[in-house]
Image (cartoon, rainbow, N blue to C red; front, side):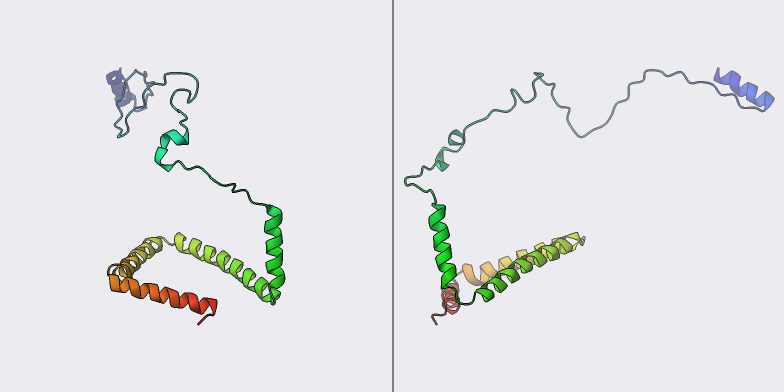
Amino acid sequence: MAAAASSFMAATGTAVLIPRVLTAVRTTRCSALLPLPPRVSDAPFSSSVKLIPESRRFPLLQTKATEDTSVDTGELLTDLKEKWDKVENKSTVLLYGGGAIVAVWLSSILVGAINSVPLLPKIMELVGLGYTGWFVYRYLLFKSSRKELATDIEELKKKIAGTE
């Protein structure tokens, strides 16, 4: 049929459109994913998900409360009110609290902006890993440097508490 159409086109100079007959050709697809096994039941997740109690899954992590750990909200509120009444500069405390909230908000915006730059997050991770390695080498690896770190922390606690 194709030969007849090409000879007709050569003789007359016009194109002939021949409808193609669709044949059932099975094509093979290359995929790195393995096919899923067929579902056994019609009910979704009925046999595939088993709920196991936490105590059976992690028996070594099981703990039990020995005392009553309930919190009395009235007592908590009265303690907070007493401590708030003892504060002399309430406006300063509110100003510092508001400043802390604004600082957290601005730092989250800054981190979001840094994360949007393509290579910068990975570079920051490398800087963090380098600093962590230096800190471990400088302060945690040797006994004398651990003692030095402990004394530095104690001095800082005294400065913050105002006992120095």
